[in-house]
Length: 295
Image (tube, rainbow, N blue to C red; front, side, top):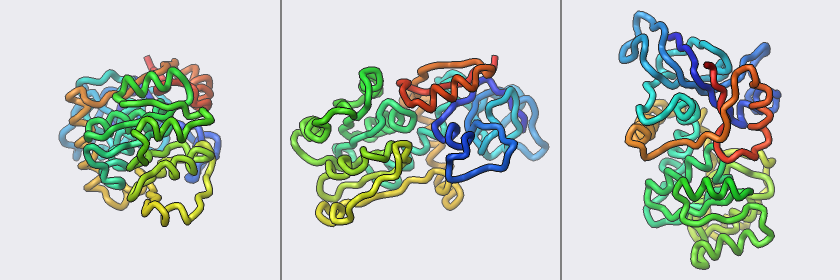
């Protein structure tokens, strides 16, 4: 299937992969970009359900920082009608990841408390919205006023300053002095240990990523709290459980079509300015997503 790309999202994984710093290293030469939105320009004879002219989103391992791409039909879906091309381009991976983490891995329940690290980032903002949809009390942790404001706009019940010396006290105060039930951690590094210590009994700490570095956790902590450290790998989930992965995407796409899930765009760059766009994404300072626009 051929797609005329209108917008492509830039994630931190795209930046790492392009720089050779990700755990999966594609052979070079290599075109970065793992998610896009655009218009179908051609379909194969065996493709059903999609036609020339359809607005779609696609995902894959590279090739999206371009004006056109060929993708297998199974990696392409019709765009949720409520989203723009820019919003749709950054929707599938972040929201599928957050859904898999909270629903499958954490089994987050209504009225539980969810602490989201990096709440102004890609998967963090998705987790805030999905956590609220699932009925949880959501505490967003972010490093700037703009990111905390974004988390609040996404539905967070309370926000805390990720850089505050009293961070654990802020989290405890935001949850009426109790430990939280679930931590959504796409940050890693120095943030992981205090976040795990903020869990209550039977808490679950979700490891989404570690741009802040790979943390070391004392193994007595899970024992004392009856808590779990839970890995979340959306790529391998799709490989090992493809049917469940597709069902999850059905769920988040349906919610997006209803206007219940919507990513936030921080900045849109022309494709000619992809280097500046990737530098912006690499800093992690923007509140919301960075997008390349092709037209």
